[in-house]
Image 1 (tube, rainbow, N blue to C red):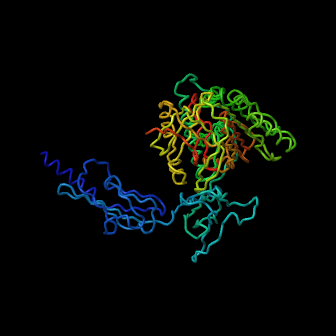
Image 2 (cartoon, rainbow, N blue to C red):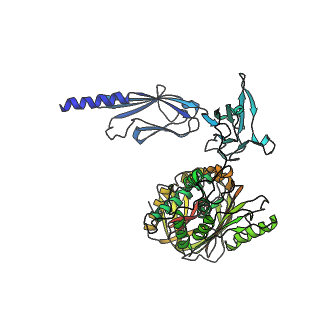
Length: 599
């Protein structure tokens, strides 16, 4: 009976593993083919990989790599030369197991998009992740049997109120095309090409007749934010901490892709603070969209109370302030005003009559709430502005161990390999926790600061862009939390530390960032009935500016966000591009995240 059962199992496995898989792979992507379609430890025989009948070798096009003792085949950059049949042959105990893959390499992705008349259509297109964006992609529409092509390049379309076509993220690897207010004539085939003529993607739009559109109404959406039922719940605080960290890493992922090699700096607690404040007045689909963007569970009714508690806990080292400026002709919801004061200590303030006066008033508020680190956030305030939502944070932390005051200079290696002389902070025996974090492929140092905060510096294996991007790709919220726990558990030791003295003042494009967060509707038809119920409000502009300095005394940082509507090292030398996290140990959330490539 045992033998019969064993034969049945082997027959079943042989049948399954002999099945042929047909796969389509996008050119430029990464491909890994497993020899078995399931995890198994029983393989003890010989494994042979063949490509189009020939043994796989390093001399083949695309240089496939055999991994895990032959259990998988890996190609880092797929090209047309990798198209064909791959066969994995296992010989063990007079038994053969064969796995076959037929690979078709696609030069571009084909999208089928069904859209309702009058709504907006987004046509996806992306440059390969490894490429630098030197020029925006060109979009074409094909018409007629001859497939005549019409150029839709937004840069060639004159600016006008009825301009319906635009790139959502200019100069970004994501070259998605937005077509507003789709009409029946927009149906058809669209092509996205690089400036060199390479096809990146194609899209077929199918337009359906729109149902009768309902007039804007706030009926049923004007009640106040539902109060927190269990203010002392122990699960609410860690829930917000996890959401803030996940949101922070999502922001960094978007920013690193749009700016792959420049200095970066932003305050997720400031950007998140503005969105949490806006969430107070959002309803229906807009509320759900903001919740998804902030990575908080839907109907997390205690979120605003927890944000208040978070701000209070941070008060020792980080000052956070929110403010709302609004057109005096608007009647803001009383419940929104009351809860804005209750949770965010922000009593809405009326805008003044003159644009210049409003600009001075808003920039003055920002300066006062960032210890004058940021004195200019907005260039002007449009006369048509109905609402401005502001959030500002300011941080000041001293090193637990002071650096030498003696001026020193060292050579900093840039991503290009060029060397530049920079002033540095130096200490021969600094007490710091330093570890090699395998999951991130980085050397990480933790520098304790006053105010129950820490500065983490992540150093890639080399100064190359590839190694920097490899660390960034691995920086998920889970990996960051694991890194912090690893460094907290490691005892500080005497370490020779060299850090560049830096001053970062960065203003990322918040309008693009908000779109990437899935909040395009804020610019179009948001439901902000909990804030203002008499008419529809739309976001006109969003801004964020962040400042951070490393000096002999410590770390100074500020940010402002507006929305119109396994071995230790005896030395740690950050004289190459690196990533840094300013972390609140007390609340277990990131305050600032940045990247230094040009000190």
